[in-house]
Length: 368
Image (cartoon, rainbow, N blue to C red; front, side):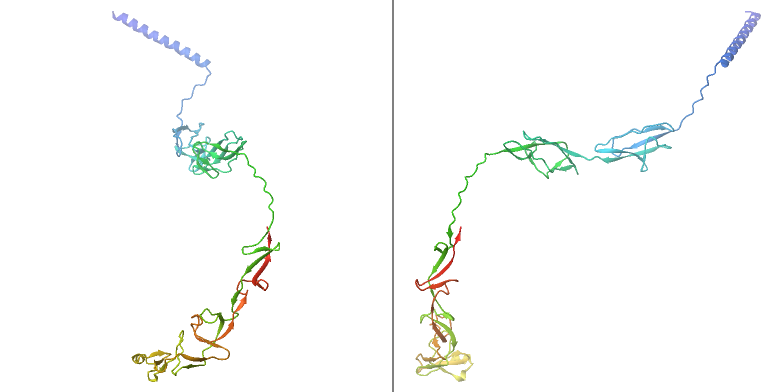
């Protein structure tokens, strides 16, 4: 191609570009005049915050992105056995209207739910009984005021669990589900009415040791006894008399001389001679084959081998040896008296009946 043709082609292309540009310009200018729609403002990046959640043992929650000024909804967590009380930030409760200015962590607060135990009753054919609910404490409920059903011809015995164990008022039951109780019954045996008792015939009666006398009197009869009005009755081998101590003998006479020595429970006290030089000397008295009496040394002598001749007692008293008094008292002078025969010692209230010679006591009989 020659140079002239190249120039013509280039010039033609330049003209075409200019024409096209002018057409586009005028078309665009007309469209701008007819379009009143506002043009969008370029987007500006908005500020946002992150909310984290501490559920304090509740279900785990994902973090929440919140844009500043934009509405949002806080989640409601769950926790077994507890009621959700709300979200707290620094001990201040927050809700969906709270304005956040930074990233925060909200803490959940809870209230423990009140647990109850439901008891369902099966009366086993007896009267209908309503279910009962008991409050649990420390995982258990205490049963009280359990109902008493009725059933014709049966006596209610107790409520029992499914294993047949009696469940009574005051029982502590673990709160791990409903409890079902079953009524246990005992058959009522036909009532046997005892025969009416015949009225007892009343009779006059006496206590032991008495016999009925003259319809309404009781009589006790005993034998009279010998007794001493004062002193003590002798039970020795001598005369049966009452005796009372008077004094020691005022004088004692020994046969064939000799010295009398007063000794308790001894009858033959004559035939001794005092060794005056050995008075109070026990070893010396023993060497002389003597015997010490009341701090004096006495020795038997051959001329004094007879017994006592006589004891002299004052007044009307008489001498009695210890043996004569049954070895219950010392030898000496005693006032003696005869024993009395009567009812004084047989018992209180007895009197002597001269016609029968018996001691008699009469009391009123009792009508039973």
